[in-house]
Amino acid sequence: MRVALRTNLTTPSHTTPIMRHLLLKVAAAAWLATSFVAANVQAADLHVMSSGGFTAAYKVLGPKFASETGNTLDTALGPSMGKSPEAIPNRLERGEPADAVIMVGYALDELIQKGKVMPGSRVELADSRIGMVVREGAAKPDISSAEGLRQVLLHAKSIAYSDSASGVYIERELFKKLGIEDQVKSKAKMIPRIPVASVVANGDYEIGFQQVSELLPVKGATFVGKIPESLQSVTRFAAGIPVGAQHPQEAKALLDYLASPGVQAAVQSTGLDSVSAH
Figure 1 (cartoon, helix red, strand yellow):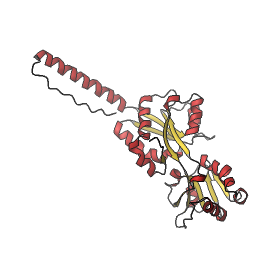
Figure 2 (cartoon, rainbow, N blue to C red; figure 1 turned 135 degrees about the vertical axis):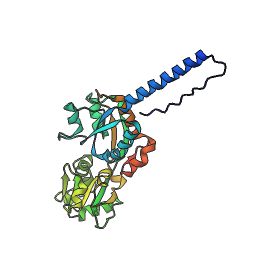
Figure 3 (cartoon, rainbow, N blue to C red; figure 1 turned 90 degrees about the vertical axis):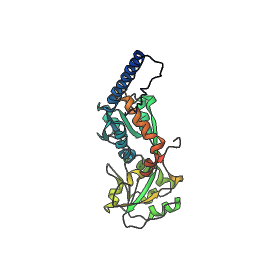
Figure 4 (cartoon, one colour; figure 1 turned 90 degrees about the horizontal axis):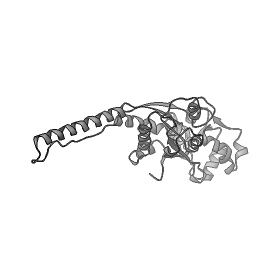
């Protein structure tokens, strides 16, 4: 990281020439030592694994962190869970290098329990809520109330939802809470791997549900809004440092930066909600 070092080379009038010479040598040595440490920190190549919900925020903030510190970020994207080779737990199991992981909080907790991530390294990043999209140009229905959402689901010709935590909640709990499970099960489908908004944008599905931060970046789909708070399933995103990380100090600096108060406006702009503690 860049270190701003201001060294005062003036000395009191009563010092002798020898004392002044020694003071100058000490100051110069301190400056060189600090510069050497800073250069080593700047040279760190951090390996980061990040899951979908925080990716939009990370893509905004990661380059800023790299620019400010001189570190480089080598990033692998993948889900927080599941059987795919790209899933973060599977990457770690294969021994892929990682200095930091960014993922769903409860999935991170599982890695901590398994001894894959250092227990004291967990940092809370953001909360993610579920939202809905329609195809660009279509009317935006009112889903601000439970009954409004219920009617939209009943009248929709087709419904798409993700294969992540939000989609599991919709399939297993939301439809039941609204009392419409039997009415919608034949026209609702879980979409694997790709963004839900993309299949709404191309007209394959009339409406789609996923975490807001994953809906907003997709072109061709219009964000309608978040589902009512009384029906929400909030997903906490957190980060940690894997056991065996090559650059734990620099990784901690990255995670602290991503959670810092000064970047929360950028986090919120991607559709995430700041953790209340921040």
